[in-house]
Image (tube, rainbow, N blue to C red):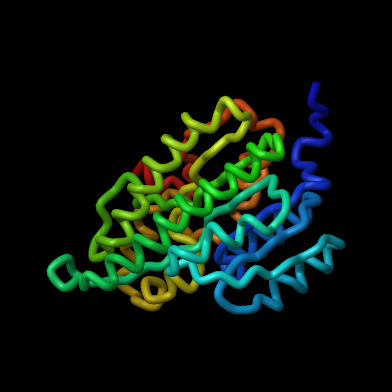
Length: 251
């Protein structure tokens, strides 16, 4: 029987987090390290601040340089990485343009990074887990816009709707191996991606007026949800989308 005092104890586990240099990805790394995880931070450039915070918690940190816009690199890197208990597909990009102005190159890039890379990493890491008989956890970072249309963010919204389907399909296929797959859907969080919205006084006011909690979210608001989805206690939760949005989605 699981001991409630060890609810969020992830000691001895190893987590791979994409887009870990700043914002939500950095917070996820620090949160998991505080719970006992060693961290592999995946990105296109070094992340010294994330590394510093993880090491300060007494855990190991490994930087894995990988461009998720390049399909060919992803599988080969995972083959040589060793065991992984937790994968958090957090990396994502967004562009803001009216539908009539969206360039195909922008569409392809965002779909590749936000959706196709999550599929490729999920498949590679899941095969790694199955080979090593690891009852792992895969968390795909989605968005409140995974169930809404948004405005002037067509490629981003399409990718997040795709993440919902990917999460559910992966969950079905991997459950028999003891691997759970869930989506975490943040609301409007104070990150670099939302800076243009927060700097637009009217847009920011419109957003805040719809959030029942009455404030923008902070990256640390996602910490408990991440820990729950990664813990042994969530072993019967798979294929779900957990919204952490201050009530936005129920307004």
